[in-house]
Image (cartoon, rainbow, N blue to C red; front, side, top):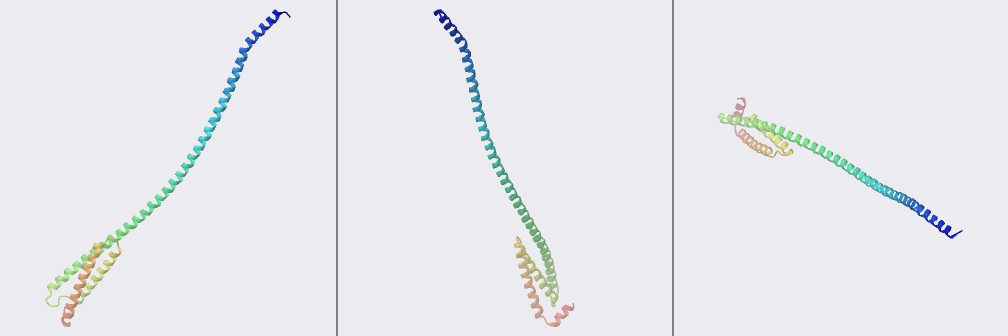
Length: 201
């Protein structure tokens, strides 16, 4: 082969190389780009999967915490309902006691009013008689009234919040007993004939 043929062959080879080389570079570049893109996508998918796992774990923790809070809320609500019912029962019981005390006080006030009327009548009878002012029946009536007041005082003593009525009943019971003692003394100091005369009247 002649030298110019070598040169021509080398030139053709160089031209072919220069022509094919950019295509090879482009192919290599595309492959490198595709490989890099695939690696990037895999990395991104792995990162996303890791984030999803982390978020799922956090959601499970939140769900567990929420469930615990709901149980605590239900327990607290049940406790509050029980306490509310207990308070309502106590309030109803206290209202019943107050109603009973009010009724007892009303009855006692009525009894006291009747006793005052009886005392007034007895005082009028004492002032109107010239002989023996009272009889054995009057003494018995005073003793019965004193016993009723004593019972009212004991009833009020058992009920809360009735201290003024209890003291008033105790004081009036003592006053009526003192009056009964005076009547008893008057009956004993008067002769029997006068007593029988007054009882007959």
